[in-house]
Amino acid sequence: MEEAPSSSSNWAFSLGIDVSKTALELALRDGGKTVAETTFANNSDGHEQLVRWLRDQGAGPEKTGVCMEASGDFEKAIAQRLYEEDYRVSVVNPRRIKGYASSQLQRTKTNSANGSLIARFGRREAPRPWEPASASESRLQELTRARQALKKEKTRTRWPAGRS
Image (cartoon, rainbow, N blue to C red; front, side, top):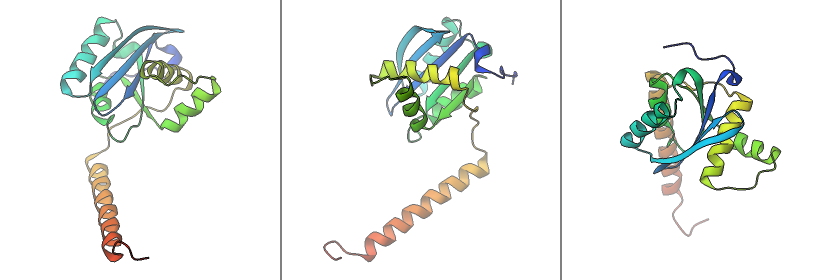
């Protein structure tokens, strides 16, 4: 894998992705302005279209930083796909983006405006790069979720409805 620029200011482009269960709202920024916006499905076909679209825009991995919010694991597949293409991907806690929006006095909450905001945040704040979890980390996450679900079920069955 090629070494990514150490600072987001070295990138020609910043890509902000507003991720939902079914869609990826994209805003590609070149310095201070949004140069392209589009939407793709959040599935493998949409991910392939996104990679082609970035290449068509001249936004290859060597000159583009990608930033997206963590969104209930809906971001994992596209983060993985872009990581495999050698993009520097950052997955950020949504509260950081919300705080950044407040600091910019931005109140518009449309998906396209959010994509542009995420791209600006990624360029300015240079959040740490995302890396996929190792096999053992993924397994530990699965086991932890299963344990939490079992504890919740145990609590639910211990206290029948209507009883305090």
